[in-house]
Image (cartoon, rainbow, N blue to C red; front, side, top):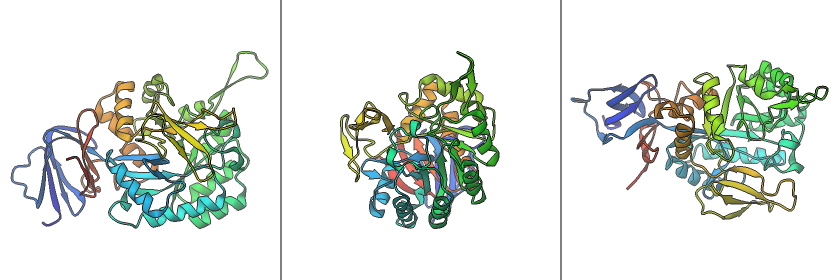
Length: 402
């Protein structure tokens, strides 16, 4: 057949098992067969994996940009060009994240996402929008501008969902804000994932939105304050959001694959305490990812950040936020390498955190996220250190090293 492909002689990270030497046969952009014996299988195209790992493509469900791409500010052409850069690091699905801004700017940018999804061969990489802000706790705002933070007023929620709900996949908000339970219900009714983050919510506040349908946590241990001291009992601790989340097996947790944002022991801890399909690795990367150390970047409002030891930090006259972490400069393949090393887990287990697990959280695990017959052939060939050789999107080669 003209549209079939055989990937052979690879180490296959399949959905339920690992093949030390096997093949993946692709027909019309979908996985048609997976096995050990490829002799006799004919295909129009073939790839000798050369004993590389054959992995499902990576899914980054929290990223603000890469290289010259800023998801909050870029036009359609720049978004599409940036998606090509993600493919170079093994990413086959991206949920582009916005930042706290006036509502009309967020809605306008969501419209550009909608258009970019339908442009060229790289549009398929984009899987909608993650709205991060403006409904965040001021104390936990991180790199979000204070002047843009808001309470989720019902009129604003209805406007956002009415004008951009078709392209929104996830929304991060602080559970302690007024109307947060109602907001969670509105998101749940539309099939949008409610996400807790940038918060110092109490146990009870977090538990209420979990009951209402919140199912994920944005960059746990970064701008999420999990415990508080009991005001009536010195040195006695009160349970907070972290306790509610760890007790709720239906809630997934994301960690940024960066030791500055997340101290190494937390990787082992979350791997131990959360169910196997509720652990997600993300980059939270920003424009400038891949740029040299010390590079300074500015947005349209004049706010500045600089690249520093694999993260981005704020430059501001406000001493409360100057030098604050505002995102990482890590790519998904590096995040997965660090996860493997920090958590002390096999490569195939680390891959789950960046493929089938985010697909499950997003509700697209029936379509992508693993190497299984019937799914889209979103596939990465890489070495044992997560250096990417080839990226396939629905069976099409969208990146290949020379």
